[in-house]
Image (cartoon, rainbow, N blue to C red; front, side, top):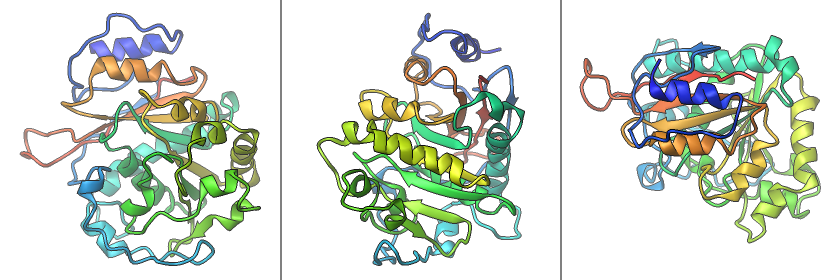
Length: 308
């Protein structure tokens, strides 16, 4: 078992993480218990704005209209699609979502608060969390008996809509401010029948207080309980240096921490995990995992929950 595996296994019982290391994340990143290891490769883009500026803004519609996602364009950009072709990116996210769905609706769900609410985060910006959140939502939307709501709660740096080829619009912040009376007023339907979206909305200087409000807690509770077949994916800000994310960590039953191989530091990952609720199921996705047998430009994803 690698150094990081040992450190994160220990974190299951305590938030105090010792022996911090500055080594880059290795491809073997995972967890000893309740883990699913996946290895596949697919060309992907990051969530950095400069990597997705070539998405066309094809969805200039009001909040209550259906957003028509350009599925061919998303597939060409390396995103999950519903084609019959067994693309590696599709297979990768099938394996990741199986663990998420098992935690949400299986035996472990009885030990988790809001087991079907999943926050996707990272230690620092640019490690691929929005790409992961969007692909996970797209993959779950292909399930026969599940629906998915993708919420952009990265209100400081919203990127979900842009990643999907659209633009930010009225959303979560407007609802929390009371400018929109019903959450349905900012919930966007898409041409993927089982996928709904909530954009981040406008920036606001009280974003931390709004996300920590009773309205937000009540809203997430409603997300979690109203539809028994629904998974809620919340794209949150990075964990380090941003207070909003720690607030949101108390509202989700599961967390995915996205790490970039060769860039994310073990010290930062340990520090990030210490900010999460120790009672939640915590998983890890290693992004941009370079495979020697395939050459540069290929990536791998790994998911392993530390259990709860």
